[in-house]
Image 1 (tube, protein in one colour):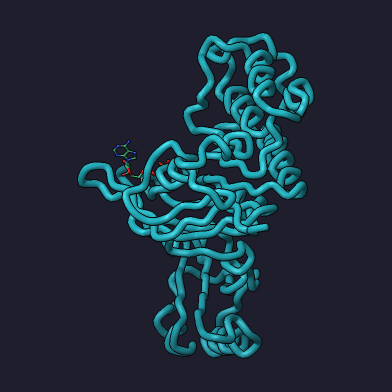
Image 2 (tube, rainbow, N blue to C red):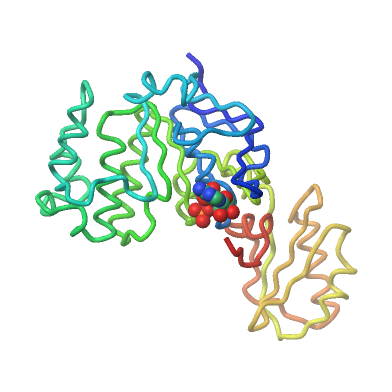
Length: 310
Ligand SMILES: Nc1ncnc2c1ncn2[C@@H]1O[C@H](COP(=O)(O)OP(=O)(O)OP(=O)(O)O)[C@@H](O)[C@H]1O
């Protein structure tokens, strides 16, 4: 069996003069969670909607469970669960009835009452969609996406606006799906969510892939050294003492972050260079620690700190 749940190759999508997706390629395996990350307007939803068969790309190739999302839509429908950002549930539909209807389209659905309970919706089962809170609407959409025991699910910002308990319940559900061999492709703006859930991360910026790989590899590759000292240290002097590809940043309160992209990373020699420089300058580096960069650090470095207008 093909191990790829989704294969996207050189995908392009334009809306008039806007090129939303400018040659995106990535692969999302089965039995794994793949997170598409990117600033607002990066092209994530466009990419996902093409994979779901809701939109047609202008160029490139998309294969979902080895099939064409539009040409093979009938075959794919029972195998693929979709949670849309907009919900996709009629406003008058009652939560329980809607789930039962969704279940009726599938041969061996998850019992609707079980899903309602798992996602904390039992007491809202008789409430029309429009009267549900934003978080309840999100959870109902998530339930509808997984009720048919799909082989693959697309979740577009599945936990946006959820409280911590509901987010945890959603994470547990995603983790179980993965464990049962389901491929999960999700978009999120929560870096912590991606770091906890995703086996692979694809970072998209301005319609292009700027990073793609196992989540751990993206954050393991670089470590940084942090310490606290008096504000206003001579960072340029410290930088001169370090090997070529290093950086020194001073944050508020005299927090210093020393980074390196030298092959050895923050190794014992690097640490010694920093502490030797400190000693030579009569500086005691307090709270000195070496830490892995978070996914958020990597994300901001690749996509910049500027606000996007779209
Ligand atoms: N139907 C459309 N018509 C015209 N432009 C569109 C349409 N859908 C998206 N766009 C534009 O395409 C670009 C990519 O949008 P897309 O929604 O794919 O990004 P995104 O990464 O999902 O953003 P967000 O994180 O804000 O959801 C944006 O500039 C957006 O304004």
